[in-house]
Length: 290
Image (cartoon, rainbow, N blue to C red; front, side):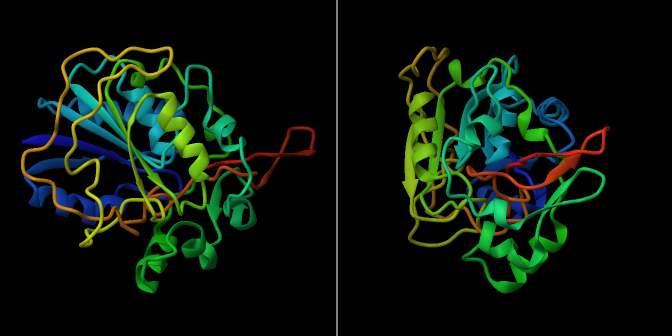
């Protein structure tokens, strides 16, 4: 059996992966979804390591959107994590933040629809949730995801990353070309930077339910490339989590209750939203990303 740990993004929770989990179990895998508090990057990394501590088998660690930053840090020092899979996700280098990457290019749908609470948390305006993170999901799934979205603390995306696990682990990157949070050009740049085996699909981002006729998910079965990324090395033998021929399915919509966003949540690459009041009473812009 292959153990697969799935990590959601902002404005979502582990339930974003529910149908993906069902599909992976049908393939003979042992998927587990981590639940992130979305209070701090450090706390979310600890939450994933807590899940990893309960698994003895080799692990494929999968992150979507902000979840990519989490797995980049959580896999460090975890010897049974053998490979990483990024689904339209952030892959920060040491000292770099999700916010740094998100601000590279404009074009995100998040800034227009991101709201901020008085006590410093963000959420996606519920009527616009589908437009931002689950455009191809049915209305009921979108409504559920919008209703269940988690509120991440403002500034969570500004935390600098530690030493990235992708320097030593084989990685796969799924580029979602219709992602309205991280532009496809940024995704391709991130994938190339870490030397990832890359799959490109013309779909919105986020965990998705199985659908016929789509490319196989990196979480369903793949053999990571072993060539080193720029400035880094990959150590250890190649490892494939495939236990049965991978079926072809989309990573899907809400099963997108995730991230709040990629799951059903996303992280946008454009300007963020929201303003936070300082102790002096002035306000300053804070931009959380999925």
